[in-house]
Image 1 (cartoon, helix red, strand yellow):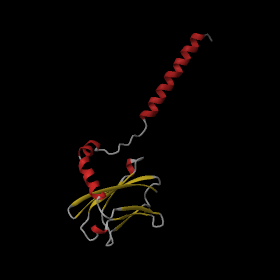
Image 2: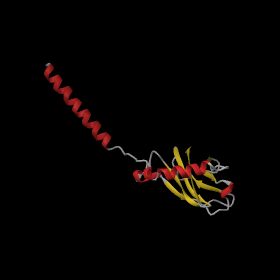
Image 3: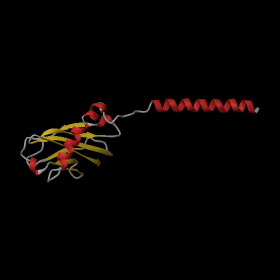
Image 4: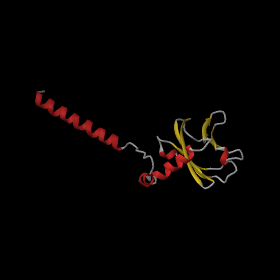
Length: 146
């Protein structure tokens, strides 16, 4: 085999490798942070105001993973116990949007809410809580590893 055929063979292998990589990368699933990203970006200042309200509370919202209870515990501030709390808790899975869940805020009389993790995959989760109490809106989030 002379050097001309070697160049053609090398070029052919390069083309095959490039096409293989293109096909492989086109089949990869790409999860967006949110489907309505641009709509959320426009409302970002409102989100920052809610976060500021939550940070200004004397007693902050507590989000923890209780392995012995197999649940995520959310403890609302004492100031909000007994108030008509409204809002939602988003369980956000960065690696797979299909596993995201939305739970309504319904704390017990002592201000604690338990969220079962029995159906959740192990790994990284972001817990995003948006709630309203006494006419004020609040937002908090925490990253947990289950």
